[in-house]
Image (cartoon, rainbow, N blue to C red; front, side, top):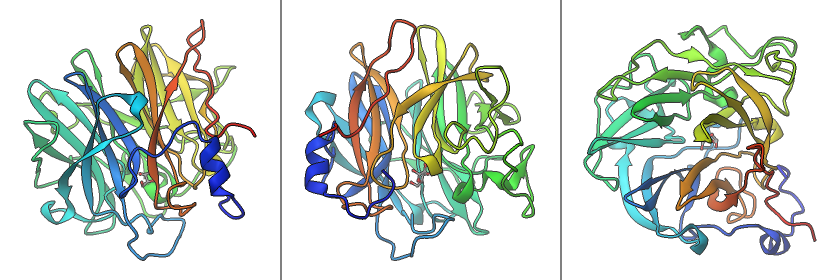
Length: 338
Ligand code: FUB
């Protein structure tokens, strides 16, 4: 569904399994969390920055974040509670505020976001608040040792982990063992694919408690997925959730446009590839989060239907997910067949 030409959007919207949660601005990469029995969503705030499409993703020129509230995921409506952070208030950030996430610890809310620094290198920043709706106060510097994009923070009974990283525009291919080298690049098809990077968070949630480590995703034979396995390998947008005591790592396959997942016994892996959660949506990117609300599980995702297919002007959506008896997630087809 990544090809936007010749799509009848009237028909597509009729067939969509869900409708945009917000229609008065563009929003993407929704990170949904339940705080005090309400769903708060922290998306990217898409704008048209007037930059042409390129493989670095420069056209994703976002400059701030808003928070949204949903009382009920069945309503398909999210209320904009306003801006929570602006790039001009983050001393180290120059451009491109991409997919964020948030974690609650004690009475504080820790909002993590990637942005390019003055050298055009993606780093991950932090802003802290006493409330899920802000005001959030940014730290002066990005998290030490952080790099690339798409932070997702997982609370494993009071132990917090950050997952992050994305190839292509997300710059992960420039790193080996947490070290940047401009000469590093994408891997050959036969090499083991990049995995997301993960680190345990420090007690104050402001730094990594240990060196970030690459997460390995294995195939059905116990071999790491290969870089040429574009339909299954990790590209960007990691998310972690726990179901029946197992850890579910889900992610986007980027250029093949799937949301896939892998299951493991430990938050640091290894994970075994388990299948697809979401088939391609209209628009190039696909990015999601998963959260439990009142005993049901929901996939928050986006497509580009509201802008009629403009890659960088997306709209967030939600649909319920279901597990089978073995704990496998039933694949969602975002548009019903005619
Ligand atoms: O929103 C900008 C980037 O597009 C995100 O960081 C990626 O995950 C993709 O959705």
